[in-house]
Image (cartoon, rainbow, N blue to C red; front, side, top):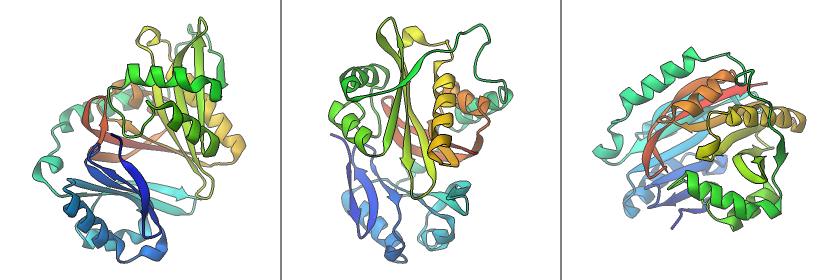
Length: 277
């Protein structure tokens, strides 16, 4: 059901019909300059409607010559010294058409109005946040299934949560009355010096308590202790709440990825936000 993660040359990609795209997750410079053409050929051969690439910006020209366009730019993404370009190549007119442009802009404007207003309401007590362990993955998967009808990675699968937990992802949870109320994760790339702040899910009955903002603040502190200076997220543009969370914590909007990700039941725009420590 979910898309496949594998190597194309020496570079890491995710691809499949679930997101109807190829996602170049990590570029190996040995694959330059042939990779842009190989990605397009693969996408056309498999009938995908988009190729999405996250690459060091200095390699962007070769991709742009292939028809990719820059949708976001994060300065200092790689170890504080190299920028990251987020690029999109569209292979169908429908995938390229930004039907969510107006709603995306409204949510960005709303987030900017909330910028710098702190973690949450002062009347809301700070929750106890713990790092998730192997014993938590079954309940975590239940929460993710409850919150997200679809998701770009298999967080509905306890085995996936456990595997990533053992390698490069730290999951954090808030419990209320003995049950998980909210979850988030920090996906760490130690070599590149960054972490993606992602996989936020709050059960409906616990929304409005500022749990996501508290989780983000806690993860920022832990990533600082790990020594990762660059924090970023790829957040649903149609979720005003998540965009507000990142604006409140001082993140900067870097751009919008159009029709990029299968999440919450459909292909949606995603906003890139970043923060340097």
